[in-house]
Length: 411
Ligand SMILES: *Cc1c(COP(=O)(O)O)cnc(C)c1O
Image (tube, rainbow, N blue to C red; front, side, top):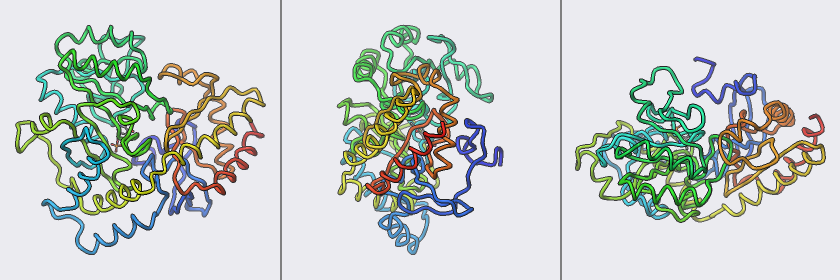
């Protein structure tokens, strides 16, 4: 496999290292092939919000396993998961299951273009929406006129339809939107960003997106693949009280199996085949095993509603770390919402991608390895968020603090 991995961030390239191979996990603990144990703060990038190998989810998968793994035909399970999602994210009046977050955002973009009859997309620098051609684009310098593809293999002509603007910056956006003229199909955003480190959207910025989309006859797409069921039951849209036209979900809703979903206004969703002309499909979409895992996780999550507890737990760890860093004169900032958190080696909490770029790489790398040596598994890049689970109880939190104290002494 290229880089030894099936997804690049796992390769530890950002920290000049080699990936760790894991063989099992339970609650907050990951165990690698050499029997080393780590307290996990990645949680499979979100889904393990109730801890690894949660018995409710394992039992649900086992029960379905006995009944068959895929039928290529509808099941009640799909309706059940869709109904649960809709009960918490009511802007998803209708939805479709897919197999990954990438598929969800890709389908949103096609649907937005098909529905509006327009072609251009605005995204924000540092927001990641999966490896979709149209969305692997960032700004050139400052406010870019045309999108520059981030990857060879994406035609310039396609990338040119994607405009990029700095996150949390209304003024820059107003300039970019002028350049899209009457051809703006959609604005897509991570309302709480988790792919340039953890950066919550600014309420004024997000409200402006809603207004601009209404004014231009364009759709507002919230990419909540990471924030959905991670920051609160209703996602970022319930925290900010903003109604997007379309929402993309993934990660948590699959309970650790490959799932995505996208949905929104009925009038828009009904443009999809077989009712409408816009094509979207998937042989394994709504897979019974994945639906069972998602149903078990979301039902438990709704019952427990652990989001305040999760936010308290990560804040508890991170505020302790901040004091220790400051006592050593190391600039450090941190924030948490629900089960997501982040930290940066710079004094002021970053507002956008450029701020993150400027945070200290050298200290990040040192801290990452010092933590890893103490058995604390943080994301191997300053461009990723942190994730905590309901199984990170007081004992685990205290252990984490003690181990990180030792790690920080080495810096
Ligand atoms: C992870 C992620 C995606 C892509 O999901 P995959 O399942 O990896 O394809 C899209 N958008 C956001 C915000 C994500 O965090």
